[in-house]
Image (cartoon, rainbow, N blue to C red):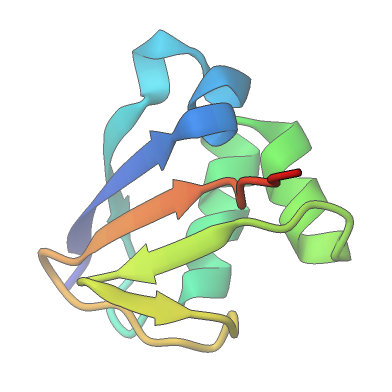
Length: 91
């Protein structure tokens, strides 16, 4: 049975996907991981972001259900809320 998740792109990540996709609901296969989500993002929303994350070229702070996640094997569940935000640099 597929799961439904909400994906939110903030800061520069939001600029990269555009206003239409800043908050998006996606359907994923049961037992999906964060990597499955990134592949879906690549295929349906932004090839640049998906390929960038998968290749390690782009890095985002990723929050899954309120917890910072740094590995793509993190499991998702029905109703998960995933936030992508760019790390801010200061000076």
